[in-house]
Image 1 (spheres, rainbow, N blue to C red):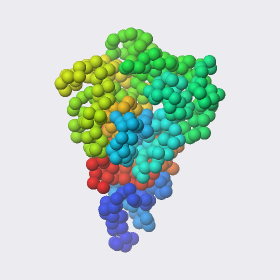
Image 2 (image 1 turned 30 degrees about the vertical axis):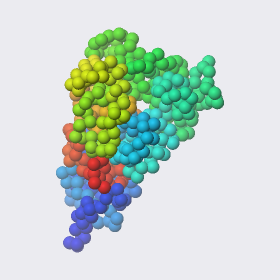
Image 3 (image 1 turned 60 degrees about the horizontal axis):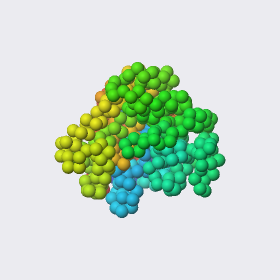
Length: 504
C-alpha cells in the first residue's frame, strides 16, 4: 500500500469531524476498538468492525491486519475506546411533551415544535437508540418517525378497560376515539357508535397485531391522588388477552405497582410487570421493608421468570416537580429547549407543580425549603419500598428490564434521555451493578420484546445501533455521559450536535 493510501483513513476521519454528522451516510469501519457486548464473557480487544447498509457485516481482530481504504467508507480509529450496543428503554410514552398538556401545546406552537424536535435527540444523547412506547398507535409511530433524527421506536397497544385507567383522564366521548384497543367486557353498555364485538380480547389483540404492535399493555389500577375507585378488569378478561397475545407471538405487560395488582398480574399470566411494587393496598402496612406478603409475590415472580421494570424514576418525577431547585439543574439545558424551560418556570408551566402540591395538601404560601422537605417526607416511604423491592429482586437474579416510564405523568421532572440516566442512578443505589444495568438495557430487553434478532448485541447481522464510548459501560454508568459517537442504523451522530443547547 502506498504512503498516500495509508493516509486515507485519517483524512476520512478529519473530514468526518468537519461535516454535520447527520448528513453522512457512508459505510463504517471501526478499527482497534474494544467490543463490550452482553453475550460475551469478556471484551474483545483490538477489534475491527465493518458496517454496511446499516448492518454489522464483519467483526475481526484488527491486530496484524492491513487496513485497506474502501470507497465511501469512513474509517474510525477506536483505539482506547469501547464499542457497545445502543441502549433500549422498554417503557416510554412518545406522544407527550413532559409537563405540557395538548391545549397548552396548541397555545404555544413554537415551544412545542422546539420540544418535539429535541426529544428524539435527547434520548440519543444518553445512548438510547431504541424505544418502546407502551401506549401508542400506528399514527403515533408515523409522527415519531417523521423526525430526521430519532431512535428506532416500536409500540404496544394499550388494552385499557373501558373508562378505567389510564383512559379515564380524557373527557367523554373523546376518550373512546383515543383508545382504539380498549376492552369492553360482556354485560357492559358500549358507547354510542362503538361495536363491542370489536373490543373483545381476541379482537383487540388481532387489531394490534395487524397495526404493527409488538406487545400488549394492560392495566390494573384502582386510582391514586384525587382519582379513586376506578373500574378494573376481570381476571378472565386479562387471561383471554394473554391467551390471544401469546398465540400471536406478543408479550403482555401490565401496569401494576401495588401488591393487589401484581398478584392479579401473576394470576392472569402476564409476562412483564411494567412497574415496581411500591404501593400496599391489601396488606395495609406502613413499613417500606419487604414484608412476608410482598416476599411471597416477588418469589412467585422470580420462580416464573417474569420480566421486571422497576421504573423508580416515576416516584422521583412526582417528588421533584415540587422541588424549587429542579429547573436549575445544569443538565437540563442539554436535553430541553431553553424556551420550554422558561415556560416551565412560568405560572402556566407550574400547573402540575400546583396540582401535586394541592394533592399533597401543601400550603400555598409554603417556602421553597418547606415544599422540598414536605415532598421528601411524603414520598419517602414509597420510594424506599420501591428500592427495597428492587434490591430483593436484583439480589436473587430477577429478570430485570430497563424502563423509565418517561414521562410517567405530566411532569417536567422526567426529562427525556436524562431520565434514563437518573433511573440508572436509582438502580445502582438499589444494588444493581453497571454490568447488570448494561445487560438489562440491551440483550434482556431485546429478548423480552422479541427484538433480539436485530438489536441488543454487537454481532454480525445485527442492526448497527452502537455506542462508541470512552469508558466501559459494564464498569460505570458514567460511560453514558461521555459518549464519543452514537451510531444509529449505521448513521454516525455526534453527541455535541444532539444537545438542545448545541449551536446548529
